Image 1 (cartoon, rainbow, N blue to C red):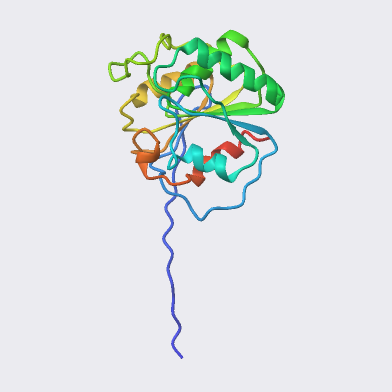
Image 2: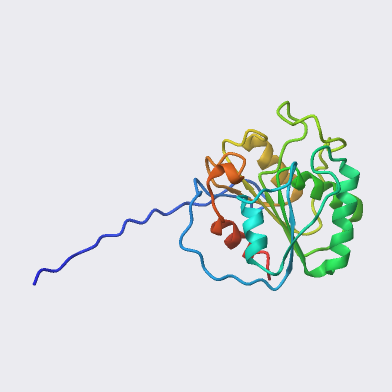
Length: 216
């Protein structure tokens, strides 16, 4: 009887420090292993960016699959005012129990969180900031108002920035600058666009693994 030998090839990704704030870079991670059952002890608030997150967006999939996840509903997704988004966020954080809250922001929600932290200085558990948009760049849409200049104060809670090397709305250098000033851990997942539904990430299980690091 012949024996069959199966050889598995594993690729290991190297983490390298980016700055003194323990910034880390992880190269080209767009796909994940099979989904694992993940539960969270914290209250997770989902914050979409401009135009909200659609049915195929990983934020929507996370919210649908996890009872601990709740979306922060904004009054205007098309032509937002920064102060309105900040107030809606603060109201939801207070309702949810400040010390047990983790924020999951995508795109325009990331500078919104920076503005909110600068104004209220609330000590939440943490924030996952995915593909923070550069509101001071020429590529930034004209509809949102009041989102620049972006606050560069250190955030009063733990945070992780996940960025892409080919994001059309923020260069990798700007994303690293946000991480340095906000005191965030930095993870580069390679060429993943704006880390949105168009990036082909599906439910993005790797993102859930990163989020789990804040749920302590």
